[in-house]
Amino acid sequence: MERDRILDLLEEAGTHVSGEQLSRGLGVSRSAVWKQIRSLRELGYRISGSPRSGYLYEGAPDLLLPREIRKHLQGGTFGREIIHLSTTASTNQTALELARQGYPEGTVVVAEEQTAGRGRWQRSWHSPAGCGIWLSLILRPPLAPVEVPQITLVVGASCARAIEAVTGLRPGIKWPNDLVWEGKKLCGILVEMEAATEQVKHLVAGIGINVNQEEEDFPPELRETAASLRMALGCRVERALLAGILLATLEQDYREFLCRGLDSSRETWLAYQITLGHRVRVQLRGRELTGEATGLDAGGNLILRLDDGTLQKVSSGEIILCRGVPAS
Ligand code: BTN
Image: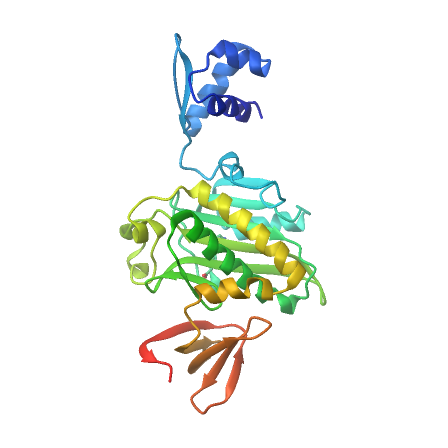
């Protein structure tokens, strides 16, 4: 796109570039250059300019623009196609529609705002404009539907790795894949799939990261349980950078997973997890179990030692850590 080429030229130069140089470099008229500069400024790019010295690139807007995300990718397939929306009901919903239309693996839908963000267990996900990363990735893994929960663990481990790489903050993973800081949720993952009996047709890995919210940006009912990276770090985080590193990390971990299975992410997951070794309550549909979380089996299920000593495999559920009650 001409606009991207103008940005490339300005950024590479790192100094003033005249309209004449831009128009020669791009093979377009000076008025075409001016129109593109105007539309870039409207998008929020900071480009100063004077008739004498030319244009100077001063920075990108705080938006999840495909170009700004792609700068951090390493030439794989994740993020080759990025659909950036100012607002949408749910990026998962949009990505599922695109997957049905045949969009390839690696396609990303990212939105500044979601008006009906979806969480696990039919909950909603608060997704205000310009504060977070609300992103969905289309995957077409050669897996059976029963193996899909393993992907959610891989995605959780990748998110933790990417957040630590970009911010230095080490989130905890609460089984299966909630990322938390001081007990408050920073990031949630919702994997939704469409499958034939034996084989996944496609799935969408939806990732919501609370990035730059302040406490008052959360509705009162979430303030006890949710936090953002900004609240944890005391400074803003560049969302496009984090989204780019996240996609690059995810691609690496996903490829490893397809080659080696869950073992590829097990160590990372274990290094960040905060569930094992704790006494927990597990809320299942309509009932609750209490016991010690003792391990993760080969399929990513949680192993719980119940109070009568029996071991119980848990494949899904909401975990509540029983704080202050050591596992005995
Ligand atoms: C959870 O309940 O922990 C999962 C939350 C997942 C939220 C993300 S935001 C991007 C994607 N689109 C959605 O509608 N949901 C997921």
